[in-house]
Length: 267
Image (cartoon, rainbow, N blue to C red):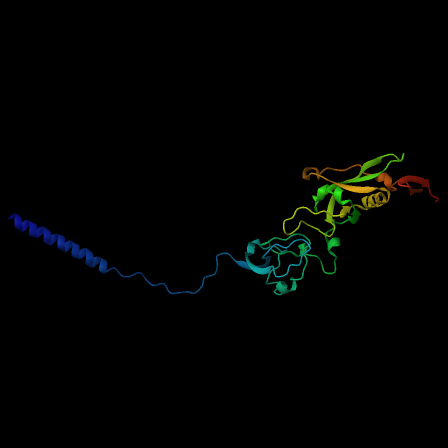
């Protein structure tokens, strides 16, 4: 066979193969159209929970910093306030007061709010404790660096019995400061220093009696700031001699010129 015929035959075969491939692709049906079935349910079930849109400092009203937020139902506890159970809570709790700091994004719990009819200080005071306001010299409060929730020692300074010089004594140790003047937490603007002349301390009934007597005896009371790592220290000794303790029935304590004496009492 002549070479020219071989070339022509090869070209014809290649053309036929190419035409067949194109025809096959054109005959492929288009992908099926999926009908719109509407919005699908989320794979995780959600519950509307009342949460904070902004930080709320201790003692402040919640105001407009509340909103309903979607939370996974499995992560919702009984303490959360849900729209299903309390649909009007958003409006009802705007005037509620925070008994502890509450932060943005945090689900609201009623345990962090002051109960209706309760004062703020009594609501944050632990059971069995007393809040006692104590006058302190502004220049003795660690230069103003003592803040609410710090722990301090209370130091009493009084004139010595000889009349010469002064005696000092740590009468209370590891005492929590509830407030300095009227401030119950750090300044919202970030100022860390607050110089005050009145400290409200968290005390036991016995400690409240001790500091009441000390205020009558002392030339001045000073607060000594404790390190955070020392706040777990167990205190075993305090100035209990300033007040009558157990086993001391039948005695009366007298304070004359800053000196404590004990005399027998009639039964």
